[in-house]
Length: 353
Length: 257
Ligand SMILES: Nc1ncnc2c1ncn2[C@@H]1O[C@H](COP(=O)(O)OP(=O)(O)OP(=O)(O)O)[C@@H](O)[C@H]1O
Ligand SMILES: [Mg+2]
Image (cartoon, rainbow over all chains, first blue to last red; front, side, top):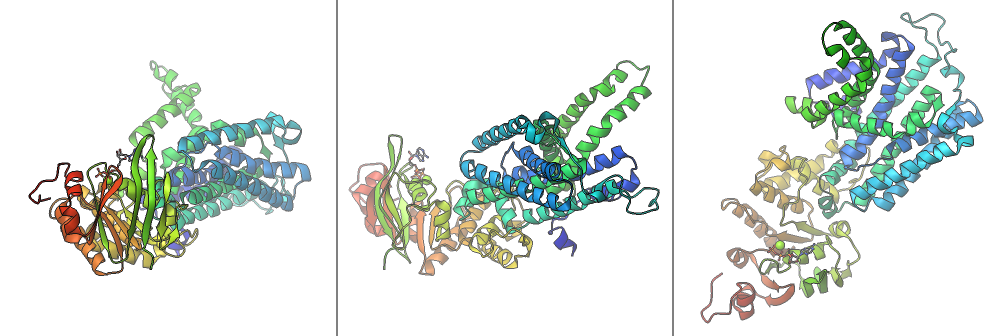
């Protein structure tokens, strides 16, 4: 049973299992464990990024494809749902149509990019994705009558997902179960399902061929696997999953804009999350995304406290001043990549196995 | 019956250098053909042309009478051309068992299945284990291929081709760099294949004693050209081989390998 759900891909390390369970429980009960708008926002963002990072790992970690267009697909999902809701009004049908249209556009684009450039050298593919993604970003900001330009678009979501909606008259465990909480659970359940689907794909015969291609594409070809076909399908699957993550993001934020989905800053974040968590293992996506987003959101506060606590000491208060948080984050990344070249998951598994 | 594998005027040019020069040759079922020649003669390149790793400049390759010149390596592998490489060519960060299982899977149904569980394809696992046992690698089945000693890597290289269950087996110096006590495993395996009587086996090999003991026929390449072809005794004794292969003028007294 559990084997089927996890596709036989167990964490294979006690510490890793404990961490993953803690993250799962934390996210599942987030609205009740961590009250407040900021906390639930962080939790939703973690759910969305787990899907996004897992789909990127399918490309980078499993297939060995370096793509810089992943935020473009994330954006296609965000804009697809966002613009549909903005244009046609809030209803579930519109969300469905928006998702389908975004999937169609995203997967077709991934297919074309793949077909055009996956048979050539990896560096060329990376450059093509960079070019296409930049073009897309420019398009999205230039067609401002349609996309809202730099400002993006705010829109409303179906009634039951709005803050004003009450599922229960009485608060549950001291928390009012409103539409925001329902929206959170929609995002959470979607994330769990998509993650498990991705886990199944990487542990399928297809997934093992992807790993073979990453390891030695020429030998995979010599065994009879058409490498271009496998790479293209992987590219489409990853794109489709990123589109769905984008849709989740739009539904949660009730907003879509270049900075939340399309920007290269996000692309960089995704790369870091994959590397920190561990390439080539989807559990790495969970840990990478969680750690990164928590650090991004709470490091500043933590540093503020540290700065205040060390007041009077020389130099230290200045070093841990909240304004230096990016510097500290950078140092943490360098250290983590240096000490855990196989990522956190690789490290944990290596020790136990 | 047409030959299993045949090349007609097969040629490849790298810049100005003709590495394989209009080689026409046919290989029949039940025959082990040794392909010999000095270093740089074009043996590996000739293999690469037949198994589709590199495209030919001109000439054709036929499998069972059908022109397969337009097919790439994957298409040729699917049609039964198996290849073991001279320079070990594995999936380094997968386990030994996974390396072989990927070859079994390539020939199996559902090889590209997206949602079935890899670990539940018991038949693939069992067949992979069978081929691992053939080359004495069962004991290291869960070791990463990258961590194997050289001799074991060579064995794995051969096991991967065996697991493809091809019609044509192309061994490119399978025992190169192996320690003396490991060589017999590979030679026995080739002997068993040969004893089957239906397989088409091509073997590039420098060790003349191995060639003498295994080959039904010897083809000699020199500077990309086919310079001799025939039964082992005749070819080895022929002046052209003495010159081409041993790099010396033919001597009166029969030279030994
Ligand atoms: N991809 C390539 N590009 C350019 N030259 C090549 C290429 N592959 C092979 N050659 C050249 O073609 C010639 C034949 O090489 P090949 O590897 O086929 O020889 P070989 O007979 O297998 O030698 P050995 O016994 O050392 O394995 C050599 O001169 C080699 O340098
Ligand atoms: Mg060679």
